[in-house]
Image (cartoon, rainbow, N blue to C red; front, side, top):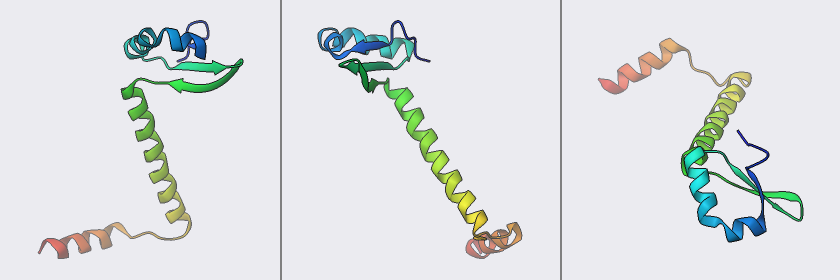
Length: 90
């Protein structure tokens, strides 16, 4: 969760306190929002949070594909899948 008083920093602050910001992000796992000319321009995340975000997006993509397949009738009955697997394993 972003703490508005500590996790939003102008780019000039980031430039002069990079090591401190990286340490902070790694320790508290809060993203830091970087502003330029008063507008949010970028976000710094720790690696684990970024990986979790990527994994969540990929999972949502798979769910969306499955949902579309259901809507389009591209499904295989459970019994049919079992038959196919049994045939492969024979």
